[in-house]
Amino acid sequence: MAAEIKQFFPVLLSVDPALEPTRVEAEPQVEWRLYGKDGKTYLLVVNSGDEGTVATFRFPRRFRSVDVPFGQDNARLSGKTLTVPLAALEPKMICLTP
Image (tube, rainbow, N blue to C red; front, side):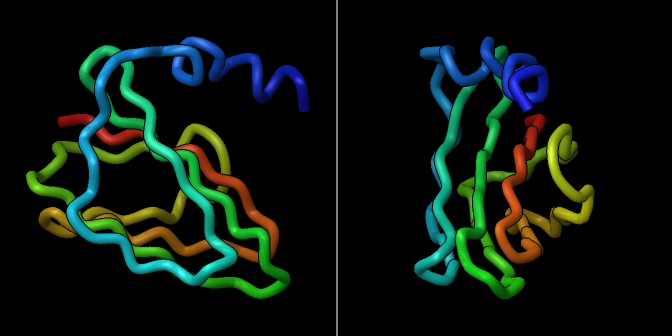
């Protein structure tokens, strides 16, 4: 687990700006936080509930691509909207490239 977290130290410790969503639709058991690094926006999202759920993030502009370096690779971009399915107790790190 420590090795998995260690790979994200440069992102987690970065002071670069991240693009903030204009709207978030998520159940109360879903926590999230944004990080910026090298012009990219990273979204750390965790479902602390014991059932699966979906969180939706709408951004003020489109991203060129989405990558999921940690967690199930099932996040999808559609226009300015990012849809993130989350299994029970699932953490996920998502990288959004402008």
